[in-house]
Amino acid sequence: MDVDNTVKSKEELRQLVKLLKGKQETAEYFRRSAIIMDSIESQPGFRDASTVMMYWSIRGEVFTHDFIRKWAGKKRIVLPSVDGDTMNLKIFNGEEHLIAGDLYRIPEPDGPLFFDQESIDLIIVPGIAFDRKNNRMGRGKAYYDRFLVTIKAKKTGVCFRFQMFDDIPADENDIRMDMVITD
Image (cartoon, rainbow, N blue to C red):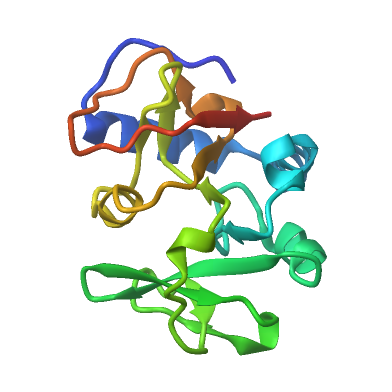
């Protein structure tokens, strides 16, 4: 999908990406997600990581369920858990321990909070749009930005090619990724 890469407002970008996601066929969605997750696996930062923060994907985001299932027994996987305006972390202990979260009803672990943030080696971050300077635009609630500013771990954004732009609106509160992986 070719996309007009001129700078747009955050709201225009969110609407454009929503439209493009809606055009993506299911088989293509899973195929492209697999390409992205295979690329993550090949990164030294992932291979060397013991603790990885990820996200349990919702429709339209790069699909992570199979990847998390595959690696949960080999690495400690932590997922976001939202409480009001705060993003917390919990260890993924299997799908049977996921409950509907406060934010968008996104599944999150039901166990105790994870506080050992210093042990996180890599963070895999979703986004609505990214740009060539590794800027990230999220859903507009700033959960990730407020959380990521406190973490030293490598931050890897993941998105589909149509979510990558030459330049997106970003300000001093938007946390830049160390790298962005796309299909």
